[in-house]
Length: 370
Image (cartoon, rainbow, N blue to C red):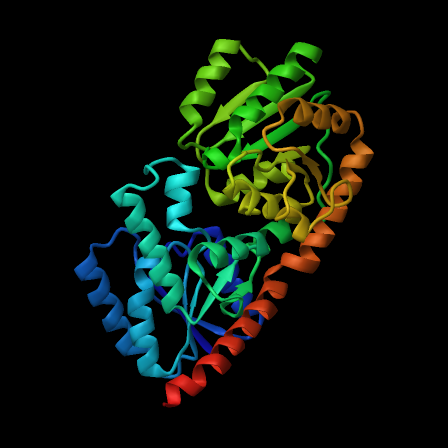
């Protein structure tokens, strides 16, 4: 089976790496028909069509990767010429991200209307829409009148590199303090202010040596975090600029505790981000916010530790208890890695993705023959 990854996407984006590895694990040949993100429209479509004409022979399905809403119409047109169904992996709604999560567009504005129309068109033209959680799938279905039969849950998962790095992971030694690591894009759903507040509570209670917080990355809320750190004079928190994916995995692997997300936006309750899956694959004890989405895959106290969203005292209390109990950290970290390997490794996701492709082919074949 040959499956085309189609559109303007970043092949190094973690979700795209996992999907490619998932297909390869299932014996499927991925074919890249792509241009760099940000390519201008005319050049974008022209290059994609030329690549399609060179590679379209024997393509069994088309996947439009994350954020590729604009590429679905062309993928649909070309897919129909080859009898190949189109699977769209939006990862997020453009409207939900820009309006309700990031607040960059005012609800009811023309810009918000265009984003919603873009979502609706892409969802309607795709033969199958992938959702990372059923919470997200329910949102797509309710917001865009998307029939449930057009949805298939394919978890974000973690790449093989994270699972390999987690093999034989040894606890960090040689320090009296516990190292707590956040890696991310400092977007609102990550809830970095909650992390800073939790660090403040612990430093006031135990001094700067009890827990060492490392905040890695840059993004929308990073300036606020840096102002808060300076204003509070926190000595237990270190800021590190954005690093490579390989270094991010290494930092998480060496941590005692990995932090997920703690935001209170509706979207934060619908997703399980890369960072959580990667930390679990590494075997690092992970704390993240409680939600229906995370409960689709993992259990509180067994595979990871959950706290209420936006609750800094609860996060501080969880870190405090785990800092004093290395055996519990190790036990939960190992169980979390085992659960991730069982449910969201590329091999497991590959089986799910192949099933989705076969469903899409079965549902579109009658229409394609007409």
